[in-house]
Image (cartoon, rainbow, N blue to C red):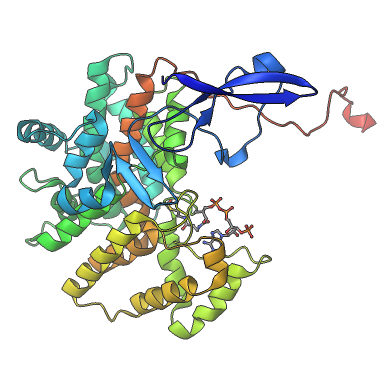
Amino acid sequence: MVESTKNATLTVDGQSFELPIYSPTAGPDVIDIRKLYASTGMFTFDPGFTSTAACESNITFIDGGKGELLHRGYPIDQLAAESHYLEVCYLLLYGELPSATELEDFESRVTKHTMVHEQMHNFFRGFRRDAHPMATMVGVVGAMSAFYHDSTDITDPWQREVAAIRMIAKLPTIAAMAYKYSIGQPFVYPRNDLDYAANFLHMCFAVPAENYEVNPILARAMDRIFTLHADHEQNASTSTVRLAGSSGANPFACIAAGIACLWGPAHGGANQACLEMLQEIGTVDRIPEFIARAKDKNDPFRLMGFGHRVYKNFDPRATVMKQSADEVLELLGVDDNPILQVAKELEKAALDDPYFAEKKLFPNVDFYSGIILEAMGFPTSMFTPIFALSRTVGWIAQWKEMIGDPALKIGRPRQLYTGETFRDYVDVEDR
Ligand code: ACO
């Protein structure tokens, strides 16, 4: 823990309390309120954690004002341009970029774990065919603790490591199986001669009846989507993973909790919601109607793929994703796609509108990722599973960091209670 350099003074009813302040290596100072309740008998109130640092971390840093995202100090645009997903996984998990031998060893460890236990195929078959792939993934990833008991002891560093590698390796297989199951096609086994992203495309789009050649440009775009989603500090799903893990739950259960949280349309579900919104808008002439709805206080509609809790200038992932979208659409010859036209015009209309400028609402990563994924042939229901498999490494890196933190305590927020106070039970005939 960093040393406190100064104090904040809190005065309540004329009585003063000193609260230590810590200065991070980057970002705002934090006031340590851990002893606040013991010394003042008061709680703080911060629903949505807009002003609360819930942990100390050295993995990822975001400067929302500057539009900067750093993994272990390295900016996301450099990583997306020059690195690749498995190298970024190594960086997130172990803190440094790997040497050539370390990278080779890591890639080989991940590659050797890509198959899932054969019994899992039967587990999948228990789901309805029309189940959303996210529903299947929450169930299957949670069930990994029933299939891989030899890596659930969180006190054993070796088991933690094996669980981490297993999840990074198997999540693409599980996501692809969830997809294949939902469209009634046979599961496709992983091919360890392909790289991580190419193998995922192969498991999603190959069929036993035909040869399937992975297009290297699409594989590179897929890898970039994985890289851009790899980690994002203490977002809702990561905080869910940490909270679940704080009780000592096994890593597979914690990641399943993260997947469940990610599913919501305000978080990872936004990429699906965004494309569905673009389809609903349908034609460029309907954009003003939807912009007006997004601005109407009495209408719950929001422009999906716009806005972010932390980024208030631009989302650096969206900048890279936009370039990638242009490349992929040109390659596939679909840059005149009507949905894309709606997306481009909607982006322009929103950026020119004072409402969005005043509220600092910009396209986020989900605005463009859905467009690329659709062009690649994925149905909208697969967008969030792809986000989930990409984010798994971030969740695990954060979970491992938390387990190793001597300050770890079970997460247990307090509340501002506004319900009834004590009252006696009344028999039903007297009510
Ligand atoms: N469309 C229209 N208005 C919006 C939007 C939007 N997409 N986002 C925020 N606003 C408005 C709100 O109505 C609010 O207005 P008010 O101040 O007049 O009440 C103001 O902007 C601030 O919004 P909050 O909801 O308070 O901001 P918060 O930080 O809590 O929410 C969030 C961020 C959830 C991402 C929000 O912008 C949103 O719902 N966006 C659409 C969903 C989306 O794209 N999510 C993906 C996020 S990125 C990711 O998870 C990878």
